[in-house]
Each structure stands twice: as structure tokens, then as C-alpha cells.
Length: 183
Figure 1 (cartoon, helix red, strand yellow):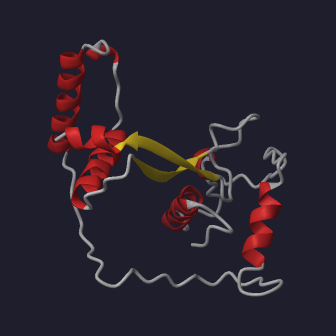
Figure 2 (tube, helix red, strand yellow):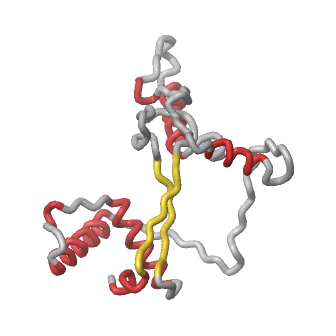
């Protein structure tokens, strides 16, 4: 998958559509359900700052003028890197959620019943704190960068089945000292 062409949601939709077609290939009149039909119209995507052209030109000229290759960039991890897999069980997530609610109640910052924190947010926050502690980061601030699906955030709205790359990067910033205080 190459992000010059599509994002993760598009590739997942493609695979689901393909699986549906394969599953129903014996039915000659099988039609994809609406939730699996890809949307190709680009007219709804507004780009007043011409960021698409900027990124395209930058990418096309990366390895010399007019490079039109879609080959993958081979990125190797720095020497000495360690890779690990960590599992967040439902029980782990619920424990984190209860710790957060207890901390909010203790600080009386908000009505704990009105706070909803997604599983994604809890997992990212916990991982971020663990990385800051493990790497002994001592800057005043630390940052977490991640991609956001923009399909439901554009005006005018774009179909959830939009085929292409419709993501934007976002950065969360936190005071390092506050992160180290949470355990």
C-alpha cells in the first residue's frame, strides 16, 4: 500500500469489497452493498492552499526531477532498536479507565460520569507515558504525532467510502513533568 494512492481505510474497504465479491461469485447478479461501494469523485475535496500539489511535487522530486516511481521507501530501524508487541486486554483498558476516573474525581476537575474517553485515547496515552518514562525524556514538553481520517471532518462532507488518501497529521503536546507524575 502506498500513501500517495490510498490510506488504510481505503485499502481495508478494497479488501472487504474483494472478499464480498469472492464470497458471492457464484451469483451472477451479485451487487456490492452500498457500504462497500468505493467513491471516486474528487470534486468534494477542497484544497485552497494547494497542499496536494506541494506534496506531490516534493514527492515526485525526492530522488531526482520528475520521479514518478511508487516503489516503497526502504526504511531500516536505527541500529540497536528493539521491537516489542504489547497487548491491551479489555481488562487492562477498563483498569486504565477506572484509574483516570478516580484521578479526575480526586482532583474534582470534572463530573466523572460526563467524561468519555475512547479505548484508542487510553491506549495512546498509556503508551505515550510509558515511552516518556522508558526513554527518560526530560524536555519541557513531549509530543505525540498520529494520523487522522478526515472523511467525516471535511466541509462539505466526503463519503466514508472515498477512495484515496484522506488523512492529516496531528500532534498532541504535553508537559513532560505532568506525564511523569502519572503511574
